[in-house]
Image (cartoon, rainbow, N blue to C red; front, side, top):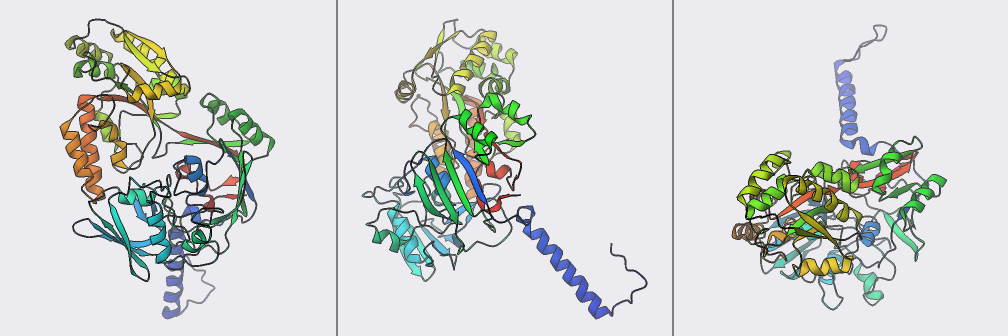
Length: 530
């Protein structure tokens, strides 16, 4: 409500209307800008830790998360990316369209995008990058993933078409991912270096300066950056580039990383030891933050379907109802995980809270009832685990006590990680404590439910649903099929998922602009030092 002082003359209606319109327009612009676009302080060096060194700098050849974490969407950018809800949207692409038969993807490119050498991104650069990442002679990382891509054609000054031999429901996932990122690179730059990435050079908000092995990686602001427009929405929208430089300091052990933060040598550190987070959160001099990313690692138990007792659905349900997932998460990661039975990450668009109601929840009475229906006669079952990943061992200790409480006897067998992996792949186990890397690609996320899994589970309906999932480019339909698969896992309990692990961070109080979404993918371009 506006109030006018009576000592001032009332403006003529024409001017009053114009003034009100200007006020409304200004208010709308502020709302569209959103909180992440509030003015931040420009300048300064943002110093952060890395828990391991880079493997290499050619994103077309690496799946290492550290390589992609430093370079993807910071130095290099992709045709598609993710909004706040982790839906796939155009990024370097402006728009796209699949043909009716799903065998042709037409991509219209954003204009005015510049590489760090000052030259504008062209359709030739995009075609070159899409051909390069699936080149078996490189070898490109996505040779197998993109085997249905037969050719990439230039069909206009700002348009390319991807031709497919079969429908690829996950094509946009591959084009959007920032792990094994299909970065758009400069054709001219790579041809000048014999098709080898010598100095990373992309179109991102920060450009490459140096890499001192086992010491640090340095990037600096690219002042010629052609930022997308619009409100900040996940990895989309306006990018402000407040920092002059980004410095990644390689400190491999957690205690020295926190010590560097305490001394003021760095502004930001991540991957906090679970047992230290509670105490760190009590401190007033730093900010400690944890959140679940959509691609979180999930901890779980496999069972061998070649075993006469474990193959029985009543026994598997007895096992599942005996487990308190919340208590297991407390025991394994001090509560810094999200308990769920879901094969769908709670951060993916297909997930809704009602899915938890379908899952076998902690109920010892039900566990005992299912146990009576099973062929179990009190024999001792072995749980295979490894101490190389502490939560993998700790979740076993917690489950062993819970299973014993309902009458299931187990013993723990500990092996080194290499042996653990080998025995998983050969199904040389009874119960297996394990962890899986989370995927935003639903086909990859449900691979271990397919007929090609290692532990002997077979379900024709799941294979049919995964086939349909791979045969549609409709993202909503794919999410619906994803949920159908989840319902089957609740009925048949092919394995038992316990929790997805949170990402954790600690940073100086003067670091601003960090939000929950940055716990998945840090947006350095919208953070600043106050």
